[in-house]
Structure formats: structure tokens, C-alpha cells
Image (cartoon, rainbow, N blue to C red):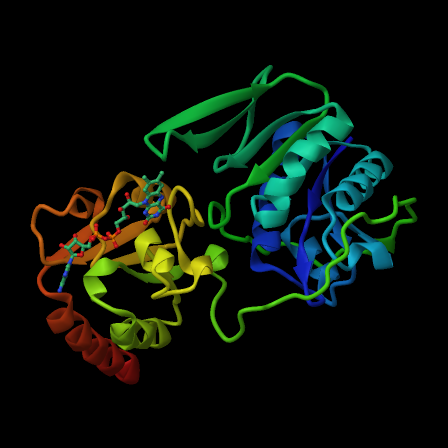
Length: 320
Ligand SMILES: Cc1cc2nc3c(=O)[nH]c(=O)nc-3n(C[C@H](O)[C@H](O)[C@H](O)COP(=O)(O)OP(=O)(O)OC[C@H]3O[C@@H](n4cnc5c(N)ncnc54)[C@H](O)[C@@H]3O)c2cc1C
């Protein structure tokens, strides 16, 4: 028996969250007393490195039908790989692809599933995992009693831990259905840290007054090497692109540090960011709800504070 981790690649390189997922998969395998194996669909030049994070073997499937993302084709490939690896537990990343796959794969493998877990399972007679529910206000403990199990792991829940050596990489032969989705074009955001993977996020809201003022937010993100994010109304009125919108109806993130600048902290916004490890709020209204969720708060005009903070950060970085 083994645990199989689907490690996503993009452009021939494994994503950072793939190493987190394999670290999680290895620790899950240890809990169950079995091996951890990894699966890469398409090619990744650094696939063997998954061995350092706990994969005893890396299986790859190269097939033209995997070039674009069709959930039914990916599901078929992962289910066949799980069978070949003798895996009854499959770990996915809780990415856009992972969210699409978790239910499909569970149905295909006749498995119980838990999407978006953020803690290691326990296996004291029953296999249980935990995840945040009700916009992060409660933690659900889910027991999966079926023989097969499919789990997706929230990004930034586990730091990748490199301990071992490279793993052997073996091509797996599978029979895939024809893709029913054809990808005509892909618009990629380039030059910035992808929001779901970012460890540092600088986010701003309607307090910015207009898109022309975002230069101070971008400057702070540049200095810190952070991703930029925004509240929903800001994306709705086209001050910022929609992929930056975080919250209940946007991207859910768990960075190490989240700056919330000129954002009120409505429950729908907090739902996507309140798992951040440290939250810093800059808001001129002392009654802004975000202060209740903040680790550090600055109650002041952002147009006064942010430029000064940027200068201080530049000096700090230059001296470091
Ligand atoms: C079904 C539903 C789903 C939703 N999903 C989301 C979601 O996913 N994400 C999301 O963000 N919202 C979501 N919303 C909207 C949410 O309820 C809030 O309306 C929104 O988050 C408010 O955005 P904001 O904080 O940028 O703007 P505002 O509420 O207008 O707050 C602006 C803040 O900036 C501060 N400010 C103003 N000027 C300054 C200054 N000069 N210096 C410092 N501070 C200043 C103000 O004090 C205020 O706190 C959803 C709403 C609904 C009903």
C-alpha cells in the first residue's frame, strides 16, 4: 500500500506547493506505515527532487492529451496511477486543478474525500483529517471510513521539508480517454508571485480611492517580493484585475504575512485571508472590523503611512 501525491507542474517545473504536498504525503504515509509515491502529469525537469521531500518513487505520464487541463482526462490518469502504485490514499494540492479533481477522483475511486485539509491525519483506529469551515470560524474533523481516500491540502499549510535524496523517475503507461476540452489560448500573468503560492501578500481596498494610487502598493510588494491582492469591490470596479480578489468569492490564501491596507475587514473578505499567519492592518478608522483580526494594526491615513513604510523597508533592505 502507498500514499500517492499528485505533484503539479507548470511549464516543465514543479510548483512550490507540489513540494508542500509531497511533504504532507510523506508524513501521512508515516502515519499509516506505508510508502509515499509522487505522480507528475507531463514532464518536470526537477521531478526527481520530489525524493528529497519524501517520495520513494516518482511516476510520470507524458501524453499530449494532458497538455491542456481536462479534469476527466487527469482523473483517469491519476486513478490509473493510484492503482499502479497500490495507493489507497491520494493527496492533491488544493489548487484550481485540485479543487476540480478532488470530487471527480473520489467518485472514480469510490473514495471518501476531504477537500482543503490543513493538518496531518490521525489514524488511531479511524482516519481523521481537519479543515477550516464556516469562513475559518470553526474547524471540522472529518473521519474517512472508506478504503480509498482522496484529500486536497491547502497551500502554505506545510513547509516543504527536504531530508532525503533524489527519487527514481519512472514513466507509467496508461490508457487515457480523448480530451473533451480543447484549450485555445492561455493568458498568463507574468513577472509577479502567484497569489495562492505567495508567502507575503500586500493587499488593498477601496480606501485607496482610485487605481492611480496603486503605485505605493506595488512599490511595497516589489520591495518585499510579495504578491499583490485586493478586496472584491476593487476588482468589481476594475481598479485591479479579478485574479487579485481575495475572500469568500475570490482566492483563499494562507500567506505568512498579509498586509491589509484601506480594507474594512468585512466577513466575506476575512473568509479568504484569516488563515494568514500574521496580519497587519493599516486603516484610518479605529472601528474598522479588520483590527479585531489583526496581529498588528496601524490606525492612520494610508497615504501618510505607506510611503514612509516603503522608505523604511528600502533602508532596512539596503542595510541587511
Ligand atoms: C455574497 C458576498 C460575497 C462577497 N465576497 C467578497 C470577497 O470575496 N472579498 C471581498 O473583499 N469582499 C467580498 N464581499 C464584499 C464585502 O462585504 C465588503 O463590501 C468588501 O470587502 C469591502 O471592501 P473594502 O474593504 O475594500 O471597502 P470598504 O468597505 O469601502 O472599506 C474601505 C476601508 O478603507 C478605509 N480607508 C478609507 N480611506 C482610508 C485612508 N486614507 N487610509 C486608511 N484607511 C482608509 C476605511 O476606513 C474602510 O475601512 C462580498 C459581499 C457579498 C454580499
